[in-house]
Length: 283
Length: 250
Image (cartoon, rainbow over all chains, first blue to last red; front, side, top):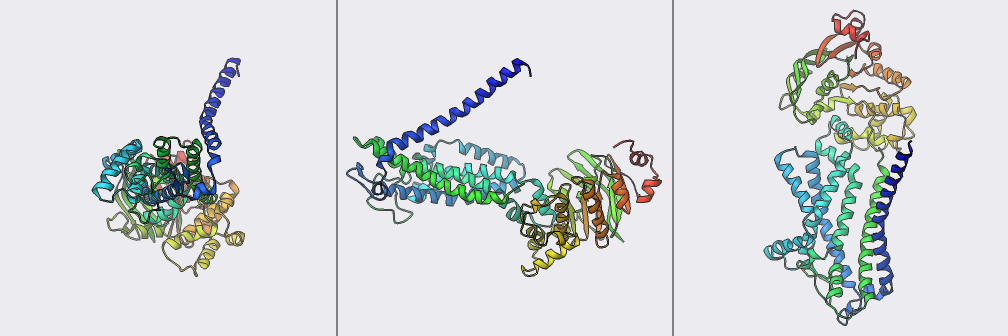
């Protein structure tokens, strides 16, 4: 190798390395910052009691529970619909103007700002369908927001299953649906779960879509039905950071830490499930 | 007995004329080899016999393909039963990422051919038919991807036999195997022809000469010559066949 080529290679590698490090810095910085400022607030009481004294004391229990409800509601709706749509698009749909339009719509859906989803949810679920500001309305809004990610990643996962598996299955006389059900899906499941993980994280963390559709400023008790309002962590964090004067920094960062921790735990569960499936797959 | 007959069979990929007026008759319980240079359409031809070409968009087929006297391209022909009776072995061994047992049991389960109670018997019978039972009977729960390639290819044949087909289409079944493994698969094919009609696509002329009863030579989408194998390899009637088998092109 000539000296010149050697040097330019070194420069290229350094640039690539620096860019990679640059990506990691904010992640680490955010985590360190939140943990450092918030860990003092974390206590059993903080996690299990209601806010008191105008949010300045007490805990964030109802917001944690509300976020759980919203995330599970959103995933319960968007995962099946998203996966079924991805199966249709990847396995059945021919390349027509209609399917191309649908694919384009999905890509665009992913680019819609989350506050627009919030307004859309308000218009459709809260007002038009008369669900009121409720867990259903919030979950459905979050579900729609999560759909494009789930569809895109599921489609990716399905299309990465080798074509020959489909050919073998069909050549053994399996129908297309049997092929999807017994060959394609089991081999795509770990990729599909990746999509689910991503949209869980987003559903748990977004404040804008739940702003008009479900979130309550303060509730003295837990929601009793899906038509009740609920508190939620991201909205609660927004309130205590902007609406409550003289609240301790520790409470704010503590809330942020719980939100991050919750997303982490939800992701961890999905990752464990995924790695179980992944062990089986080798090709 | 003729098992498969084609009459003026043409296939187009979009505007590309890939098979041109193929007419041939394949004997029951014989091995028929299709030889020819790469891209001559030999794989495309065997892929017609179980209509696996249907998966490709923009394929158009004219003419007739009769199996047991019925045209498989008739609109009401039952694809599932066609593919059940005309099975396919592919170039690379392609077991599913499942256990050995589940691979063989895949077809019978799909077709509900046996209750779970009868399945072990069917799996055993299929593995015995490809001489794998002795080697694998204690490893049935293991992943099919961890056995040698040659055994994987046998396993794929066993998986096929488990759905009780009449015709086995083999698309260069030995191209991923070493010479010893190739010989073993060839021995197996000679055994299998007692019960099955076998059509094998191969680019290996020695292989065609060794195992087949009849041979078709294809070139640029045309079937140049179709005859008894000895005749093709000793006294071909077309000059192009002679040129190919003596290694002048391809």
